[in-house]
Image: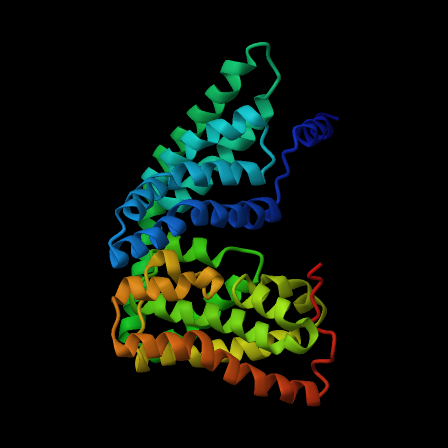
Length: 341
């Protein structure tokens, strides 16, 4: 009876302890928080420096400084936090991001939000109790968990980057394929790359994988979805195809093979580099190519690399491979159809 009572209480408080809630919904919301602060700030900063627009530089600094708060609010929103918990999550996000980076903000905000939801409106002093519990628990988690999380993510990210520099061919394939797959899955490749501080050649490989998925699915499904689908996937997200992938996983083969080819092309032929904020974004809003430009600063090789790795090669590889799979009957007309209404 006691166990049943706890379950009913958590259900009433909208506390759902599942992998979907914490590693998909919360992580996905974390990406929106990053885009609304760090990523957009990086874009403004690049434009400000290149075109000498001081206003853009100022906007960039303010946007980047809001990263922690944006993360906290975005994650709490995804967890359906009531108002006081949602607003308090801004402080938790700042503490978590400062002490443990984006993953630290994720851990601190998830725990603080759930505890805040549990005590929300349970006392007559709700105006004090709810934000107090949320902020205190979140800051404590950030202090105890944050440094360890930040250290591990930094170590793992350095390992990936070092391995990519030592083995640009094999790691180019691996990083490009895995980050590209993450971009299409209902998780956040951008959050993963930022959490790992994935820059340099590894960032370039990640960019190649993301672009291969987005541009690949955009051109592969053009006959079903037309120009609207081309833009929605090519400049939006290949995640739109996730429902179709579940129905027929074979449609994922052409873009993934393209990523395994463009990855080593990025690392070995053009030696493309990126910054963490752009590595996991692909062609979404052209953030990936802008990140490459921010990291490399121009040059003929860079522009050719962006043209071929981010746009031409994904299309040129995916289209004929897709046609072969269509002729083999693995992909049928309608398998890539999107509901864009």
